[in-house]
Image (tube, rainbow, N blue to C red; front, side, top):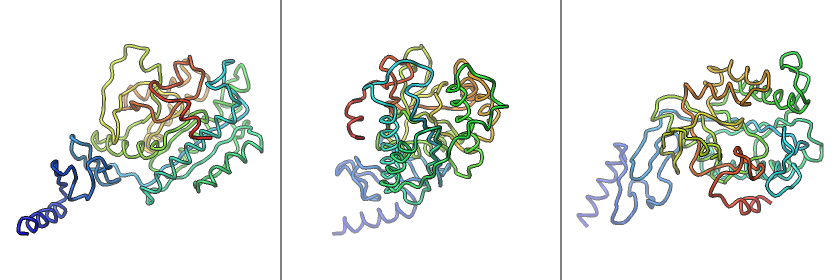
Length: 329
């Protein structure tokens, strides 16, 4: 009894002082009342990864804006190839928004105080297709709004392109950047409609952003996909411990990525200039930012880019693609 009383006092004292205790014999944390296999971290407070210990969160996140660009009429932009499973584009968009909605719903159960808003930037989608996307968001009680892309808004700004689809892609991307610039949310997640996501996507993005940016004492960029091209070049990289997996540094992304509102403002010229013409690579001015700032991508992937199976910008390795596809029917 004396031993148990002393133990209880010690646990209370540890909690008061802000320390966490680990009982490796019983494989639990008495201060957290959790098994060591459970998530020991607390959003906006501390990130705990065994055996690395605790990171105090100084970069606290209160809100997230997701800008989802969609055009359900274009099969694969700028290509004649077919996607994995060779289905109509609307099926990929539906599975993309459904997997995203599921991830948001999962996150909200764990972090109800963090605000998440979804903006669907639609570009010439049919009314029927758009209703299908809206119905999914309503089903999962996602806070969303639909914004129609004005194709003529930037006609005098963006250089003439070989095809109207190329112009439209640049124009919708620039529109998404302007939406981010006017946002008051802490983080902005730019997302395209041909990615299917794992349930833990939003939780991992927010919690890893908090952990890594707090460690580095600076804002960062996060790419949610583990692209094949990351392994096709002999590129030096650093491995980083995130909240629930390893991450690697990278100096290239596509147009699906997350960053802070602060960085949108700081690198606005890069975001803006990237949309004035089709560059080689397409993300030229975004990639220039990564020469100055930290950008990381997950190992293994949180989002799968559903392109042609031979694309170096598509399917992530070591993923059960068919299972992920069927889970989002």
